[in-house]
Image (tube, rainbow over all chains, first blue to last red; front, side, top):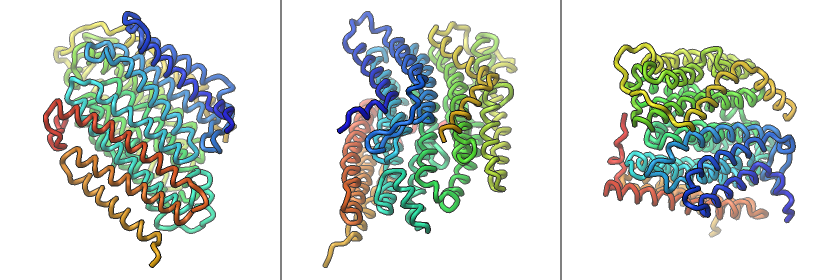
Length: 484
Length: 103
């Protein structure tokens, strides 16, 4: 075996080194140095993020007989996930200093790094065996992270719901893969695509297999009708884990979904899964929005908001042939900053006062103006109000979808547009509670920890900066068009 | 009488459907986990049989099965650990009672 092919996996090796260093630090350092574990992990992860931007990382290469592939696009996607992970890790520092968590603090950071490693494999896999291994590496440790608050019953309840639905969804996915294997005789993405293309006609079994695969991955992305686990898991999990689940897992799942659908089943797009995807997108956006309106718990509210955001992300998958990939990457990047800003505020308030209900946010402006302002920016960006980044990400994803140019796409984008207006209603409910409500504030004035403020500053800079600095999107577009 | 592909696929399909039925109807978390294992085994049978009868030249299906077994073991370990935690907290592993978070 040629061991030099491991050098194709530069980012994976970097991440493994980060994981090992954190693990060694946590295991062998004296007890008084362990307080810094969080910051050590954040620092190493920041170095790994910077390393991802080295020009040599984005060279195309493949390893293990084509099972693994890396190029400029996958390297860029991994960089986006790295940025989000660094922010989540900074947000988790305050939470990980609680008495009940502190003895297992190192494990939390190690598990986060391992799940990120699984997501790397998911994105770079060009063979379904490696993809399944990556998917399980990305989803099983998350169950342990959801159950991290050992003293809270909700945490366990959320974890059991998560693990049972996660296993069920991968079972559905693997059943679909076994059909695909039976039909085509290979598990390589390129060979399956070749066999499907050579077949010419579409068998019923292939459509069933595609439906199973879409159902299996749809569970991970919490698309309607596979979304029922989302709200309970988001509510019960510790807040840093919820924010990790809602942005990083979802972003990685979306990219992997794009690769699978187009590279493997691209030949049968209009015959087999175009309409399935249309139905999923309409249901996901609409039902996510309608349920978000009646939520009172902030974490549940953001769970349904993230369901409807997943629908918009799926629009980028439909628009693959245009500038869909660039629009999707930009959308996920902006979504990371806006959603993490919202979760940063929720986490800060929960850590200081233990309150997570929307009614408690009444009059937050009077006691904690900065937190209220950050939350307002996040809500405006999620709703897509210009000049914040969320407006441009929605704009680009709609334009890229429309450039497909069929009537069905126009109707789909119109429904998505109407839903943006509906979503304004519930995002502004939060802003109204914080700024306009005249009731006496429930949450007293408090000072958030330095790590929490640092993470929020990064997110606010991202929300405002990405909206103004147009070169980010142009850079992504150039990179995608040269790589394709 | 030759034992052909279909003699393996039908039992595997029955196992899979039993698993789905059990997963959706059983109330005990351990029983749900057993149903999941049943489905995973049905998938393993599918892969092995497709490899053996349709594509005997390569070993891809066999290898997928080996990895799927390992993954299933990891999943069960984590799920059992969580269920034990629930049992410690609540002395009960009925899924219908694990619903403190409704709205």
